[in-house]
Image 1 (cartoon, rainbow, N blue to C red):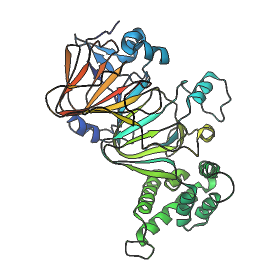
Image 2 (image 1 turned 60 degrees about the vertical axis):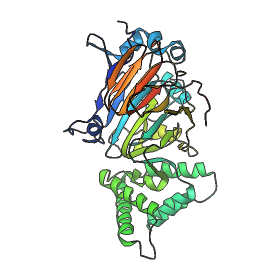
Image 3 (image 1 turned 30 degrees about the vertical axis):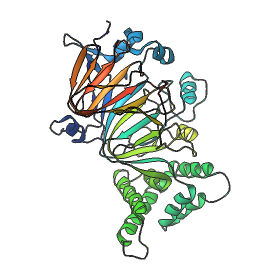
Image 4 (image 1 turned 90 degrees about the vertical axis):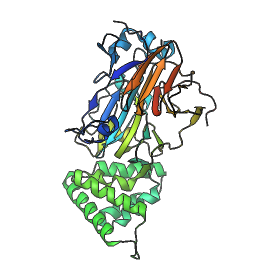
Length: 421
């Protein structure tokens, strides 16, 4: 089997039905009726557990992971093949978040490789499933709430003290003292994830009752009025309690930054940064890896020992990801990772908009507003919102998009872009 084009080729993409997904968001994007099941992630890529397929001229479908393995040079190009082997280095998604995801951390490239190869002892019962890192970046299509990165220690201490309880004061005091801020923050995270089992329900009950009391009793005209940010923190804490009534990590909004991304804003999450998406709709691009270390807020396996080793109290998400305008119609975000970069294209009219030709290698083009027409090397493909196309490295021609509409272009990183700001 060899897939050499013509490019672009229509992708048939799986939808993952995790319990935190929405029954309406992906359906709304794709212009279809609401689903009778939760639809969490639209996957576009060659992940072995659920790869996309490429629709051939005769109507048959070829799994993208098989195509990459069979002819990596044609699909990936020599540069990407040399860097990453016979694998697509990125996974492209649309996230439809109706309930909070698990609180998690991703390892560095060195830690993932050494852990997978058995070169180091991994504490606890965690096993690395592959030798790759999992950096990720999210573009908000609609407002997105997320917990991401640590707050300043004094701010986290103030929030715990706000509870006015013995346990809250005990945690607050741990954030004041000798040692680096990194150490103080990591220590409180350690205290929460290792909280004695016999006292966990009491801790969560105390947090829940105090949060409700503060929200109910401190209205805008009260002398102890809460700030809007404090109200958001307490509100999300109360929601987490309802979903995880025995998990001490319902206190995560006190320790971690509560971020609101408005449509068009971008968030990059480096290794070691604790994070959990809470609500919203976004386009996500990430390293093609399964290496996740969960800390809580989940019914899945929690890797406490290795998570505590990997977490970095100094790590912060990047909301100022470097970007560059490639043309009046295309802007690129290029974080300092080799696995991926992302561009957004506006096609304001039916006349073709030429995409920046300096991006090489495999590319996924996702339509989020349209319909649009994607053309390359004499072939073309019409896409509706929520549909995507794949262009292999052997595309052999410039890519253009006709609208009106909006398209996101995912590609491998480590490429030179002009005028990075």
